[in-house]
Structure formats: structure tokens, C-alpha cells
Image 1 (spheres, one colour):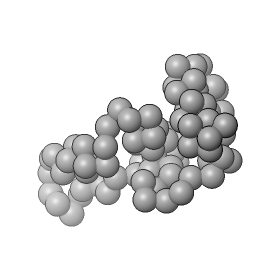
Image 2 (cartoon, rainbow, N blue to C red):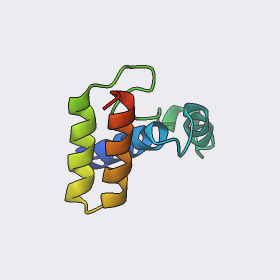
Image 3 (cartoon, rainbow, N blue to C red):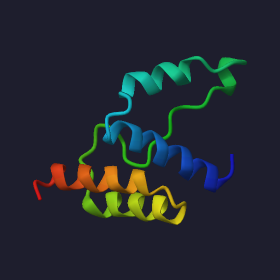
Image 4 (cartoon, rainbow, N blue to C red):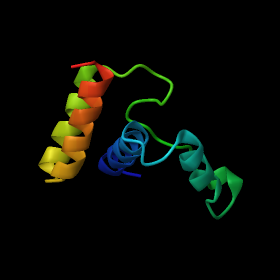
Length: 88
């Protein structure tokens, strides 16, 4: 897997958890459905690990990532998450 794809998957998984689109269990269940040999399975990738406290710099990086992709709805949801998370 190339670096850009690795980053994209990590951002998307973290985004989904942060904005409440899915839970960690949902993502783990999806990864458990991988086809092929268990030796070929990929572990879930996250930009911000679900059990870590995220810094506003990481959220800003995610917002910038989605701005570059012109996914402004995701930017808006991340900004709301950031404001709620930090009590702004």
C-alpha cells in the first residue's frame, strides 16, 4: 500500500469515529471480514488512535487534508468536533 493510501485510510477511520459515524467496534468488525489468508490481513489504520487524546494540531491537519480534497462537509464536522472537544 502506498503512503497516500495509508494516510487516506487512517484519516477516514479517525474521522468516522470522531464525528460519530461509526464506532471502533464497527471498524474492527469491517476489518475482520477481510478475505484471503489471515497472514494477508491488514490491521486497522488510524491517523489519531481511538484511545489517545487528540491535539488540536492533529484535528487541524485533518481539516486541511479534507480542504485540499474539497470535502467541506467533513471540514465542518471536524471543526464542530474540535470546538465541542475543547469547549470553545
